[in-house]
Length: 127
Image 1: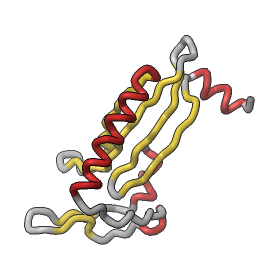
Image 2 (image 1 turned 180 degrees about the horizontal axis):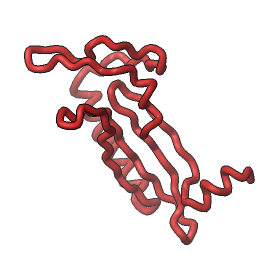
Image 3 (image 1 turned 90 degrees about the horizontal axis):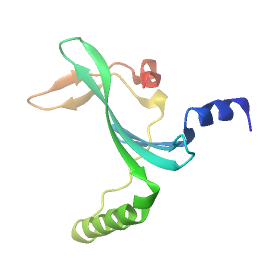
């Protein structure tokens, strides 16, 4: 086992997968308890702007999913996704944006909002 893998394992971090989906990023992290039982954390991360501080921050929501719940969670998720697919047309898959493709153009523009986002590459690793 590599030294970095060993350190991660000691901290309970086993495997990670990040999925970019539009304005959100989902992190699927396999971790281990002290007794070496694996579990899954699912984190939704959204970049937000704090008007009071004039800075960006990441709003994160976590879900902890334990092995004994995998089957029921998967069945429920599959059922709900299948229902949505049968009731509504699915949108075209989003194209992934590379870090270089983000621009300084307004991300959202309507009668209530006109926000200009700075280049994401400078703060993307602050998560």
